[in-house]
Image (cartoon, rainbow over all chains, first blue to last red; front, side, top):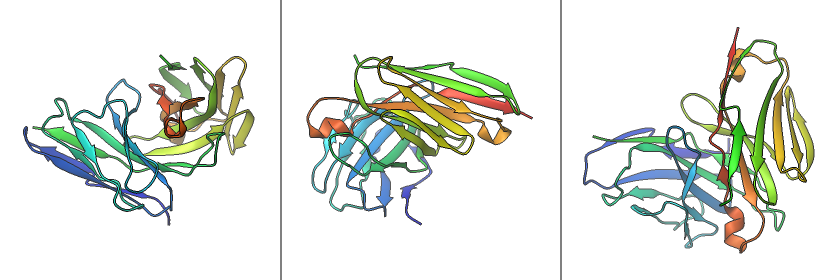
Length: 116
Length: 114
């Protein structure tokens, strides 16, 4: 079945360490996204990518980095520069059907990062 | 600032009740999504609307473009409907890349008791 796979589901990190969250999709979607979710807040966009080898900063990109070397993969690195990295991270992908902005949107199961 | 407001924040119902969750946004949009997030965190897309009404099983989503308002209705609610329901909009305008961006509401926590 097609879908998005995020790993790991749970991750613990010591302060000062970089960690990378994996996101893989087999939906043949062009666009991929990383969101952060904190209690009591809406999802916030970290980075997004429309096509391979291209990505754009979202609203809260500081302290994060991404790459898009393959259509299927969009890993997120949480660097030591991110001051408050403990959060739930969601990867998503979508199709694109033109100016209407209509698209199919699919989410992964999420990765919960805790900084010790 | 473009914002999405959901109400209520929390909703408790008895099994079988009719549920309504509301979503308001501030400027013109090209699409609105209703999403469901179960405990454990994964999110499922329920509906995408740009006008009118959509129905899937016991779920109905409506949108009023002039009033900048959407509602999600659940008929004959069941404990398995307990989840956080999230509204997200794609605002009009901007260059091609920004059309991919969604603005999310904070969610409505629905608890349906047996």
